[in-house]
Length: 374
Image (tube, rainbow, N blue to C red; front, side):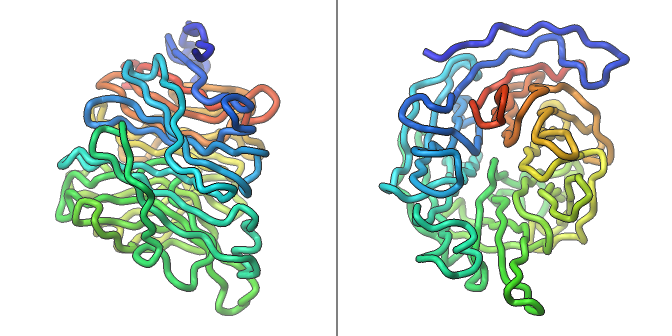
């Protein structure tokens, strides 16, 4: 059994736009140091077609770093995130690194696809970037046709999804989407990032965001448009314009302490010139972006601070990301990566890293209402 937080009742105050909503319900899903893992990181959550919630994370065996023995884990909730199953290991490749979960649901078939990455556990990111280590970062695919109860063995799709000149690579972290409108309706889109070498300064590595997509229900994948340099971990959402326009929101290394964004009118094949998103301040971290269809809102969560990974804040936009309104601060202290999920017409869930002294002490799920945000 997991320790369950009491329902936190906080009054909304007009003078405090970041006040928490009337009721936020929280439960710790993964707690570092428990169940055989030193640290849990990189949360991703999705609702299956039967409405079960699937929470993915990396289980880091011997330390909190990005290198080493890392397994891909799953927990399930059948009651909207109020209780969670024991964890299930989806992928354990001995002492190697299996991670960066990025699930997507094909609503037309009910199939869940899970994109992930792999590298040798003894190889560090810098060695992959410099091409001095053994092997490289590879891209893999798992699938479930029974709402996440069972999963296929991982299948490598690197040849379809990674260019030969790319070194480092990450899927997500977070979720993928299926386009609902326009000429590319039905397309599965996965946000990813990569590194390559600067042609002018070959020893200098460049960061870039991109997407991969499938037009045949996950059987094959293609590389979409790229946005670089200076961006990496990203999330994508379809705007409410009826044309299938995509918005990609990216972690930025341009030194302006804000997220960056770009749009695509062709299903992710190409992207507009990236621009800052000044309201979405950030200390260089991951963030979550979600289209909530029933509420007709875009949702966004990240550590809203210019220098530190603290102040995990949830925001909403009713005008296709032109403006943003603060909905709630889910954790004022140390916090980092997050993943959003629509629960019903009036409720949203957020799976996020947080702690008292550092952001990676636990991964918590919060349920909160959206009704007052309109």
